Each structure stands twice: as structure tokens, then as C-alpha cells.
Amino acid sequence: MHLGAPAASALALMRSRYSAFVYQLGAYLLATWHPSTRPAQLQFEERLIWLGLEIYQHDATTVEFVTRSKIGGNPAVRHRERSRFVLEAGRWLYVDGVLQ
Image 1: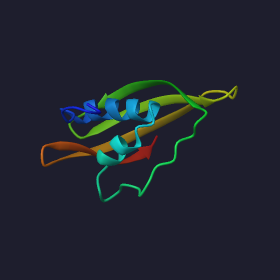
Image 2: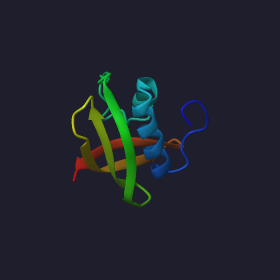
Image 3: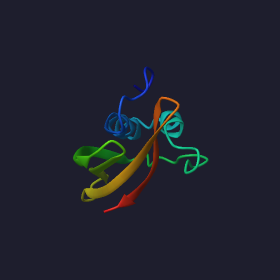
Image 4: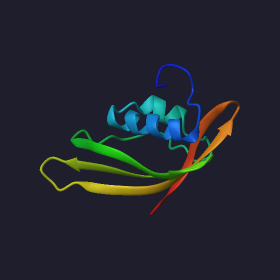
């Protein structure tokens, strides 16, 4: 998906965006972010290690998930979010998320 066909669903886009964060694919993340909420640029923490993604629930336009990550020898951190997505012109886009 990062170089090929657009995601087929909000869930597929969520998974591909997680991978893009892992591999620091900033251009892909910005391209899949809705223009109304997209930041001008992204900053990546070089020492951040991603440990996993768990999907808790999803429907056609929302995905609730938890990611785990850590920096160096620090304890792992959990990030739980309910993300909203929209389908525009045949492409799914990330709109925003609410921390859970």
C-alpha cells in the first residue's frame, strides 16, 4: 500500500499507517491524512522503537487501537486511540483521533 493501490478500508489504512510510522514514511503519512487536519510536517523520534499494534474494534469509518512503543531502556508506553477516517475520491484518509 505504501507504494501501490490505496487502502481498501479504514482498517487497512490504519494498519498501513502504523507500518508507515514504524518505517518513518512521512510522505505516505501526510498523503493519507485529510487536508483539513493534516500537519505541515512530521517529526520522528529516531530512538523510538515500535512494539506492536492491537485493534480493539472497528467499523466502516472508525478504528480503535493500541500501539506500544519505547525509547531506549525506558518502559514501554501505550497509546490508545479511536481514529476517524473518511472515503474521498476513492481513497481512505485519516481525519483525527481521540485518545482513550
